[in-house]
Image (tube, rainbow, N blue to C red):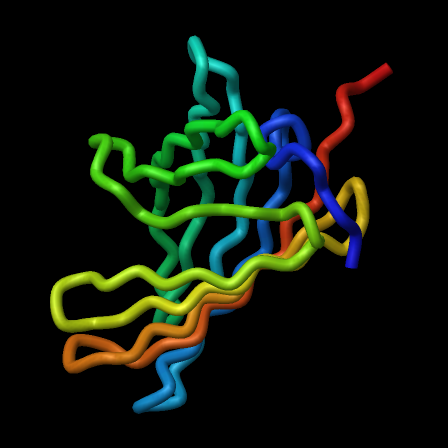
Length: 145
C-alpha cells in the first residue's frame, strides 16, 4: 500500500485497465480491457474510459466518463459524467473504501494504491438487479520517449 497525498495529481495521465466482472448469482464471467485518461479540464479531472467489454463470448465497445473534483486536502469528489454525485475519494493512506447506492442496489468500492504506477479498484454490487464483483487493475502508461 502506497500513501497518496493528492488523489488528482496521482491519477492525472493515462492508465491501462484490466477488469474482470463476475456475476455472483450465475458464475458467469466477463472482462474489460481498455484505457483511462484522467485529463485536466479547468479545476477538475475528466476521466475518459474506453475499451472492449467481453460478456458471454461477445465483444462490444464500452466507455464511461467520470469527473473528479479535487479538494484542498488532497481528497476528491467523484461525479458521474452528468455531474451527479458518485462517491468520495481519499487515497492519503493508500487505501479507501466507499459506498454508492444505485436504485435498490448497493455498490461497495475499495481502492488500493500499489505503487506510483499501479492501483486496484474492487466494486462489490449487491441488490435485486445484480450481484457482481468487479475487479480492476490500473497501470500507468508512460509517454513514449
